[in-house]
Structures are given as structure tokens and as C-alpha cells.
Image (cartoon, rainbow, N blue to C red; front, side, top):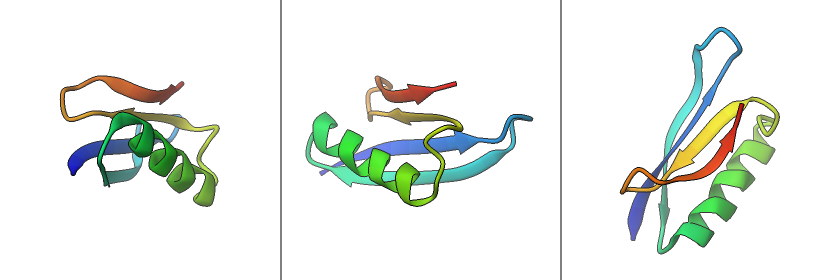
Length: 61
């Protein structure tokens, strides 16, 4: 399993969530990250999901 980093921010830059996502690959991590954001109603906030190598998998500003 790899560890991915999911972060969402308020408009003023304050961190709303800062979580790790465990997944076997990038596609699984994107699905899990999107599900977390949807569950917390944060899909429209500024957010990002980064891979262990720093690659952005999800990004919304």
C-alpha cells in the first residue's frame, strides 16, 4: 500500500481537512479521495490529492 495526502482548504487558506489515504495505486487513491471529499461535501472547495512522489492526482481551486 502507498500513502497519499488529501488536503482541502477554506477560501482564506485555512486547512479544512488534512488526511492520508492508503491505496495500492493512483486510480484507487483518486476514488477514495473523491469519496472522502463527497462525503464531507468538500468537492467544490480548494483541494488536492498528492501521490507519494508528489504527483497531483486531484486538484480543484
